[in-house]
Length: 362
Image (cartoon, rainbow, N blue to C red):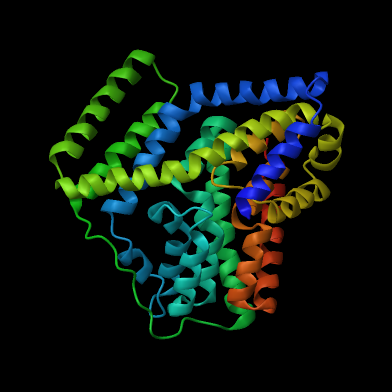
């Protein structure tokens, strides 16, 4: 049935779209131009290393140790910071955050650390932060990371305060891979490659550094691990890539189309000021929109080109990664209506607050 509906949708699209219209032709061409720009500037030295890093995190670093720190016996000053940053360590994305959230919540993490993890997880994974920084600017990339972590802790503490719910017993840690120092070194090598690739320094120095780090990484992948471990790393890397890249490319193309189709005056009117109204509108839009992993970056880039201000940009990124209409349905089933709708309101509130704070900074 799904295949039939997809075929029918494609047929209707090609049947009714006026391709002879200049604006339609220009919009489609602009979509391909943006794809061309992304392929040249952001794929090889940003996305590809990010996928390898995500594969390393999944295959070679221990996740059970992190999840254990969210358990009912953990102190607040431990559980909340860990919950806020573990999205980067665990490489969670929007498609995996909900089952992980449900698991740690039902197994005793408590509503505070669990909702902190739920909010921060998708927004601070390695690929999201670096792509934001490369495409939208390092100031926004850093602001996104810091604002998300801080807001996540406030949201979790507020949820715990409102519902007086701490972790229950019976927390069971996930069965992770046995990590060791080699996995950490391997991770840091790849991370340093990604950081160096994004620096604006002398090209000769950069190329030599990238070559040395790349060769070291290749040597370690070939001779530093058992063959099965290396195969698992490559398998996990490919799994991330095949799940994310198709959606990302579609998102980039649509962002290019939107840039031509969406009237600039509408964007400016709704999102063009660093005030309460524009930032709140951006937070609400982000809360209901569904962004596949990393697709928020090209879409936000397109909106910024049309006049979206700084504050609404950050608010849209914060709310857009943590919520969507489909995820709201799942979260409501997991938490119940009262807790779920409180969480939704807090996401919009803190996204708006931090968006406004970022908007007033020159």
